[in-house]
Image (cartoon, rainbow, N blue to C red; front, side, top):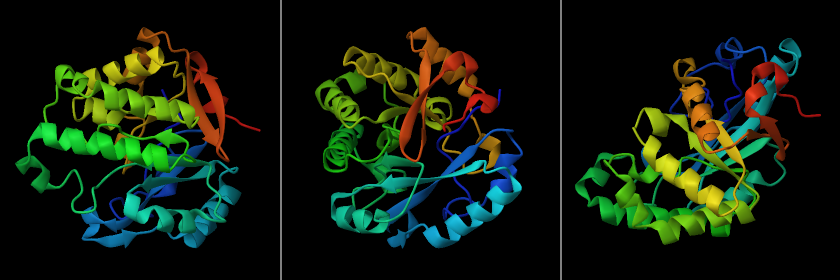
Length: 269
């Protein structure tokens, strides 16, 4: 089933090499790419990972002439407190259809770097979830909270471990609601890193708090992962009584019924 994937990367991100045209071949509907923005990017040797907006926009404009305006613009904002001003300065005057909010690092290391495995899982969880909450408190204009579990992917975390951080994680979800954001089901996290049960717990808490907006994102860096396990993620949402997913255009949200969530139906005008 071809579905609108709201988290994926092209060669405009330093850790990907995929072409827009290859994603376009996967669907007859629209696509959106969410390229990285990470200042002092520890995963990139401390260099700033900054999307070349002019080149990105020019390429999309060119391809939209050929592909019936099917490409939308997105960005994945890697938040740190230290980069807050740089992020705002970068975003000023730029137009994106969707902004993802992520926490990838603590300013010293990225949470997927090997050094993290040398630490206690409980310490990493405590630090990471605190940083996630701070990002939501300090940056409220993004549209989607991405991969809430990014910082703990290197550990075998059980639901009982996650529940120890219920107060902080419920505060995270409450801020998602207050900021009018969507909560991302990151299918790479769920089905590659084996964190489905952790997402089930978060879905349960989110619904309990009154949350209703969900986004589906594969975090694809190539077409091999486009729409990664979306059928299973949709089935999971249905299990919890969720009937819609949220998509964005020009940062305006639209709820799409899960039962008709195929590429030909995704139009916002």
